[in-house]
Image 1 (tube, rainbow, N blue to C red):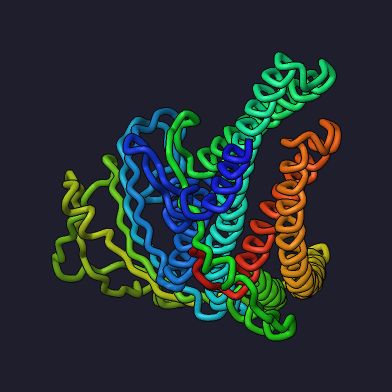
Image 2 (cartoon, one colour):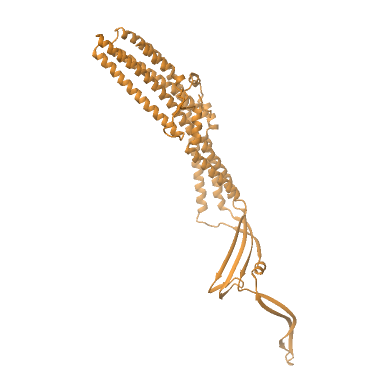
Length: 480
């Protein structure tokens, strides 16, 4: 009996060093590898990266909006019935073909600073989306650490439960042998079998919990649910390293400078402030410079040819009294009409223009004022969100430091309690083997030892997890 009890103690003592040993057929994953797989495969990270890519495109487009806009236009028509002759701009009633083309360009010289402020806001929004990518990664890292630690915790619980099942079965066999020899009662055997059943239930529960924790980590890493792997357990030094004296104000000061949640909130506040300037731009006039060129063609437009034949005299009156005619000379111009070729029309009708355009807002139904007011409210709301982020970070860090100190004390207490319960169980076991203790005393001592071991395992991983949470807020790489 004593030999099997020692086996359970050996299993517990070696759990820290052998929990991460995996079969050759399974991959051994460290906590950093689990984090890397999650950040590489997780769809939430990909969505955040797509949002950042869209913001990058918006930022580039806002800079390109400063460039001139150029547009070209070509029209071709076959006209029937009553139409306007493009060559004379008069109504006609006949069929003809018409074509026109133009090229126009314009650039804003002043628009209330809206475009410049839009560029600055889009740059801030781009930085905010990049910070959001880091925030999503940060949140996932904490989830991975939690799931990873849960696997380690459940593996140790399973080992402890299996070791206790070995002890319970050996005890039941021994009680049966003693009953056959007439040294024990049927009640003692029943009590031992009851303990075996309870131990088997603990093993089943531990196996189920371990399977669920593996499934959770697989889902975070976006791997198949039936993917098999083993996790690397922390060394004993990792538990010792976890005991550190952290100052909450110092952790807060460091976290504010490195934690992406704070950077994200700050950038969104700055972007909202820039939005006020964008909205104010609608109060100002818009000055634009533009130019263009164009030409047209009409199939019914004739080509007019003029020939100067000198001068001719025209009577314009007579002298009063003498009736002598008064004549004047005018140019004698002979005009002839001919077909006007397409190429010639396009060349002859070519025109250009340049000019300025000034648009002055007078009244727009208070739309501009409403936009400015909304922008100010958005800015105030962003300020509150940023302050809430800072307050929440301060709160959770102070709580995390307090939890770490409590976890240190609990780990020391449970370690001492487990050592005491092991000694107590050893004494009861010796007394029970020689008939000086009954089965109830033995079962009670065994239960107390099991509970003390489970409490110690929980405290051990709770301490390690709480220390990793502090590292998380300090921006440190989480490793064992």
